[in-house]
Length: 520
Image (cartoon, rainbow, N blue to C red; front, side, top):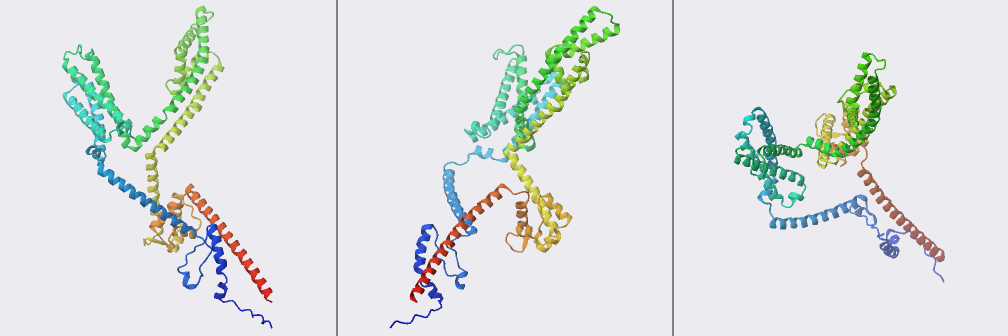
């Protein structure tokens, strides 16, 4: 007698999960082979507060893990660097000369000495013009010697502090300039001693140099010391920018001069031939005097004289043409010899003036401006200073905007306060001044409230406005692409897992349905 079929029972929580461990174990092995663990804890109420997902990770969790790993690497590197610094400090401590050179007072002191030395040289030159019989006063002699000793001391201190870097480091150009000037100063002192020893001044025993020639060399060396003023440029940002821009445009200047020379040379050949024919024709008419009045002869003589003055040779023609466009002479005077040759040459000369002044010179000016801008942008210190100045200006504007919105001076901005003030003309003007386009008050407020506290403090307001002003930065777009790539990858893993789970559920349900049919 067969037993009656068992009545189907409603699966309980324990029975429902009872037959699954075997499949879960298999799935776990398959999941580990694929790189993830599909066994999930039961989301009961007691475990919800401490639940940690094991199958998938959120972007925040991945970012925190990467940040923690980066912090650990940074800590390890800092520890290794600190050990190296401790060992290097134990083996090598800054010398006295290095401490002096690295002191800001050192640069300030010698910058002041450079300026006073330039003034001293100017006073000496003017005194020599006013008192030709006593141009080399003892005050100037002592002054030159004192400056020479001080600048030599500076050079030796820098040499002792920098060592090999004196000629190979970042300041090698300035160091070479200082070395040349100091050597010239000592050479000047040696020549003055030689002049003092040869009191007659007629013939020097020092390498056969005459006293007058020696005095000229001394004056040239004094002028060389004025070049030391260039070192002050490194302390003044505006002067350094102008100087670097001028130096940067030298290459463009050379090619601009070559282009202008070719243009002037081409037109010079043309006008020289024309005027030469006119001069030859006038000379022949004057010599023959065929039916010419006195006034006509005088006019032709004047035209011949002016033609020879401005177009007498190719060199004179080129100089006259350049002076016509550079303001050295009125081109109306240069045009007089060409008027006698016909109107076509007058039009050609006017075309040369228009082409040179309106086209060539303006293009050259534009090239110079572009070169100056590129020079300013390539100056690392100048770029950093410009960025800092712009950032400080924006921060000041944002603080004023925060004060304008926070009329109660509570230190925080609520959404109601923000919504009430956002449409005012003053606030809109402030937003436009910092390149912010606020079209939705609530969206903008949410972006500013980074801690989701319901109110915006001054720090959040500053950081938010600096982050949101202007167009999207390349870094913002790159971060968005990175997060989107991560999201697509995790979404693909999620759908793969869901599909696998649905497949196994289908297999299990088919198996259970078959077992139930067989039992019947």
